[in-house]
Image 1 (cartoon, helix red, strand yellow):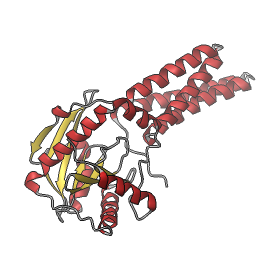
Image 2: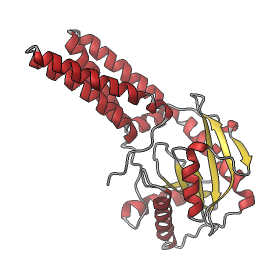
Image 3: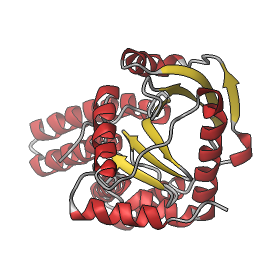
Image 4: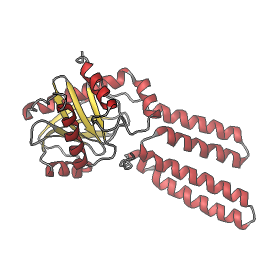
Amino acid sequence: MGRPRLPLRDSERALYPFAAIVAVLGVAVAILAASAGRVTLAALVLGVAVIYVVAIWSIRLRTPWLTALLVAAAACALGFLAGHVVIGVAIAALLVAWMARGAVVRLDADAITTHSGETLDPLSAAHVSAFRSLGFEPVGALSFRQSNGKEIIATVMIGARRDRYAVATDLVMTVQSVFGHRFLTTRNSAVATLPPEVLANDLRGADPSELCEAHESALATLRARGIEPDAVRPEDLLEAHMALERRAFEWTNSRARRQGLETFTRSGRGQGALDASSSSQRRIDSWLRAAPAS
């Protein structure tokens, strides 16, 4: 089952005006070519523009292989139009290689900073407000910088029932529960792979209320097997979540190339919702066998 497209990242927002220009120019050139009787050229120009615009649109689906395929197709078609197919193919190969390289991410696990109180990122204010309306209260925030220099601020909130907590950034939201050294995380984005001791319950593009419902359903699935979550202590939550984030960063860094390949080739939908199905039960079995992080 498909989920909504995800919000735009800053780098993606910059591409949309350019894509609009390409679309307008493509249509204009196609009209001029058609009016001059060059119907085949008009069709090719319009096709290149459409393929490129669809490629930029597909970025929000978080399926890099599809975006790369469309961008490569546009580059090859452009080379054909210019009468230099080999150059078009070479440009396509370079673009795909650049996109694949960008999928390999390394993060500094020691650069995570905690902030007491409510350190709110304006871009995530709506998400935090939605969680508050569902009974969550902020206990603090974590921050770190991506390789592109952008600062990510994650607001950490504890649930009213104390068996779960939520984390919200400008793009990614999760609801999490603790089971000893293991975690259950219900998330709206499945871009990142997780360590084996973290059980993913993926609901792509979900809003806070949908995440909470999906998390409750996943907890019910675990309770059916006699697995109960630990109580979350508000005073310890920020440090505990920082330790989990550091573990996730170290896991990603230890397998950066493989992670990049998986990110590039996956559908972006993740492993799906956790339920009573046999595939979910196998995932739970694997999660229960996961050793504590060293």
